[in-house]
Image (cartoon, rainbow, N blue to C red; front, side, top):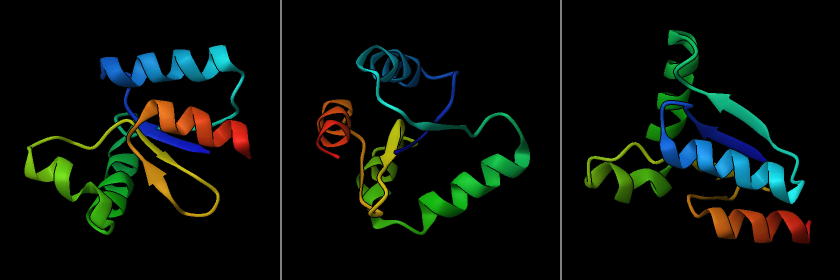
Length: 86
């Protein structure tokens, strides 16, 4: 699983703590680490309709959890549950 977010976000920091506590392996991308990573995140976000509701509310859409099958969720509990099923 991949997790997209930033360490500037409280929800992202808490999600990382939960995933670590649960022993779930994940690849973390902090899009605030460089302009190139930010551009990559924005291209990804702008090309996936799943981000629509977050964008309509003026939110970024993080943390975002992306699974091997390409599906994604913004819900930490769902991410934990799905990761444990894999």
